[in-house]
Length: 124
Image (cartoon, rainbow, N blue to C red; front, side):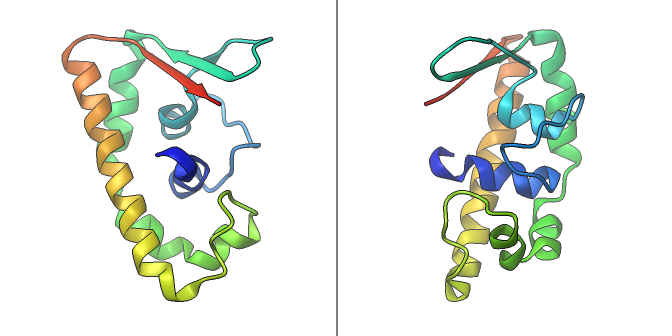
């Protein structure tokens, strides 16, 4: 997701990176469940026992409907990174990109569930 991580979290939850949402599987898909304190980078992890709930939340989420209801202007109002929300002519392209990242995210959690794995998230 690279620079669209904050935008994806906003699309999934309605809040940006600075707003924590405990016990929200859609938020946890982006930022993990448990963070490691006192690290220079953001490091978080999700244990294999929690992966299924995150995957099911992603499976049930309608990203197209969420993006239609949000509108590009809401990303700008919420000061969501990256600062690309002034370009209304690019709105369709941005929505497509977010939908692609969502599918990649959902497929990632599906694969992790299939292999009974854990997830580590590092944001530099």
